[in-house]
Amino acid sequence: MEPRVDAVDSRRGWVVVAAATSMFTVFGIAYSFGAFFESMSADFGTGAGPTALVFSVTLSLSFVLAPITGRYTDRFGPRPVLWVGAASLAAGLLLTTVAPSIVVAYITYGVGVGVAVACGYVPMVSTVGGWFVRQRAAALGVAVAGVGVGTLVGAPLAAALIGGIGWRATFVVFAVGGASLMVLAGLVAERGPAAAEAVRLRPLGELLRIRAFGLLYGASLLVTFGLFVPFVFIVSYAEGRGVGEVAAATLVGVIGGASIIGRLGLGTLAVRFGVTRLFRLSFLVMGLSHLIWLVAGDRYALLVLYAVVLGVGYGGFIAIAPAVVADRFGLEGMGGILGTLYTSAAVGSLLGPPLAGLLFDELGDATAIAAAAAVSLAGWSVLLLLDSD
Image 1: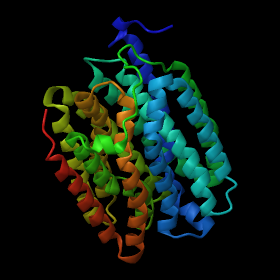
Image 2 (image 1 turned 90 degrees about the horizontal axis):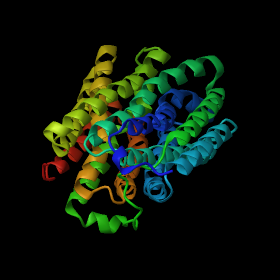
Image 3 (image 1 turned 135 degrees about the horizontal axis):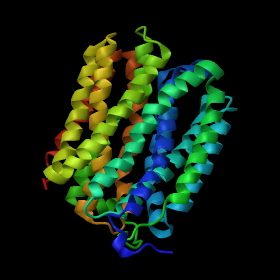
């Protein structure tokens, strides 16, 4: 039974927001990869760059598939998409437990988890957007806070499990638990009363000819080159300076926890100060945060501060992007447009961590971190060309 039109901004909409456990699940697992990094490198006998490529393939594929999952959500609703994601997550993680080499892991983990992320994020973002009008920015901020909570929980949990049962058995636990949560999310999620009918998926080339979209695309591409570097390397960086395994993995969790502040706080403030201004601010915060990592060295307190500042900026980026798209392009075909925008991050997530790994191996930590800061700030500078609200 279709929900009534007067159900916008209703209690039922907030129930659908709760189905954002799909985001908690897929990002909690994907962003815990840093906790697996050293164990997988040792098991497969690979260096930083090749191991980081597992994570890069995962996120890049998720962004490439985002327009497709967004489009299918526009047409068929979120439930079947979420259930496909559950199956992919379970299969990918379980097959990775028997992977004999890193090359096989590129396929099993990269494809399995990558498809799951694509099914668990953009579909729920566009679905939540269809349940709200006045409270859309705030609701989206709450929904995508699931990404932060998942990151907060996932990495430390993974580190603790790996220490007790090993990385392969930990993937089994994540496969069963993660798939179950996504199935439950699918039972709750449904299209909202303000959702527009599915429309033709506009190709990337057509959208890039729109100035606002082109600027958003270029800025997002640049900032994601640096954004995903700490998710792969901050754990091994800290462990190399004497920090314990769980404490090091907790840094990724801190990024996720702090991102909740950015998602909720900046998402709410966007109503008052304008989504474009707050979106631009989140990019600046992300770029400047890497400078804290650059000078942190073995001082754990500074590493925590870096994780907090990056997390706040990252949370704002994730929370406000859907509101920016809805504000400038409307709800019609929002899933497809938002998914196409996220393909910009496919390049950044695919190339950023492996290139950073090469810089870490060949030129040292400082060069890799400085490069992450420079390219992130370049993304902020592109947003300066975007008209404010």
